[in-house]
Image (cartoon, rainbow, N blue to C red; front, side):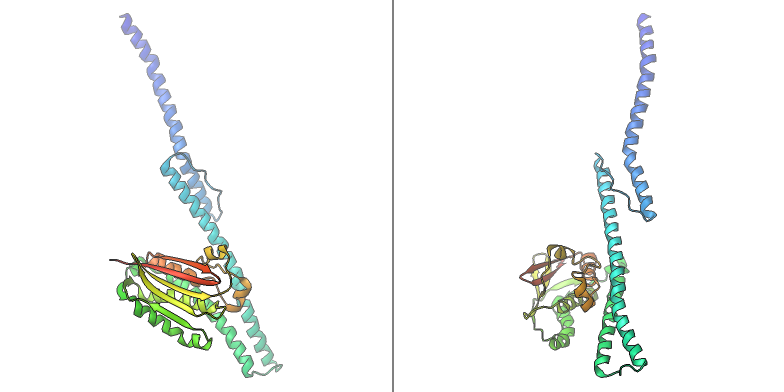
Length: 306
């Protein structure tokens, strides 16, 4: 009886204490575990409202750490995109204003009879209009590749890459001849699963970039070869020096190496971004560049399905 009485008293005291301790411990653990989720909700709401929240501190739980790091990376990317977009709008406004002002000034002077529309003036107006068309075309191409659906991504065929590349390069024969630039090609045959239109667009953008920023006397070189599990396309051209920052950022949207230089060439910072979109997103390949002695080489890696 004494044992039963002591056991009952012990259980009467211990059981409620254990339950209360368990409840408190459960509440503390649950609160600690869900705190990052509440922070994520608050930060997501801030992003929804157009504000960029501060970085979330990582927790000790592996899954939550991964989610936190992913969210922080997303926030950083959104900040970068917003900064790039604002810079792009500023650059585009300036770049569009210059040719439009020139065209408007010439036309107004011709209307008032101050000058006559001779061959030189009309040629100058034509160059300014070409700059406008080039910028608008690049914006349209970027929009086009952003709108490609997953169904379109599957529309690839096993094509002979050599004929595809030669077909694209043939479009630049007249331009290269007029600018007195030599072209060297060394393209090996290989069957690759590609979207023909996409790869031709990527090569066109790289060739336009090589011609647009050509500086020197060396020829532009185009090579294609099979390297292990991928087919490598490389385009090399002489140009002005590039900093390490430039080399790392060339394929980012709206990034432009030299604002003053782009005012002359009409660059928008979209051509190489379109190349990256086509090769990396559409074809699961790789794009990168290397620079040696003011010779810049752009590489495209297209995976092979052996």
